[in-house]
Image 1 (cartoon, helix red, strand yellow):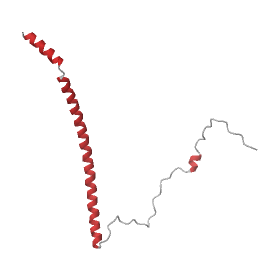
Image 2: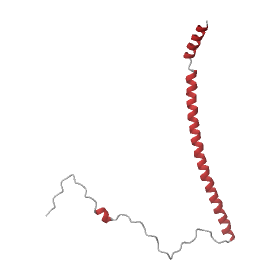
Image 3: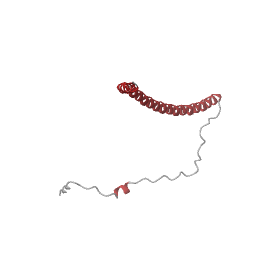
Image 4: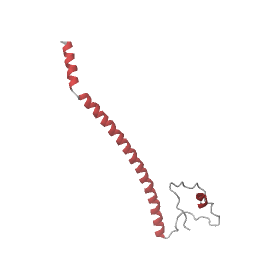
Length: 114
């Protein structure tokens, strides 16, 4: 009787797909958790960006209030114009381009007219 009950239980368990459904649901939940974590991370980055932008807006609004009261403008400090400008990085000129290897021609060059 015990052996028959064990065989019947195993047969019945083999016929059901409960374990397969559970495994499938577990996979889906794990995938959903990954997506939710990625979204939460992205939202946290955006909140940080918004926080920085709001701080800048608050600073600017204080400047507007000061300007309305007649205060001096608080912009970036003026650069000293007496110093020479830093040398610019050299870029390739036409001369360098002309020294490049000539292109191969895959057709016969037309004869010059006389």
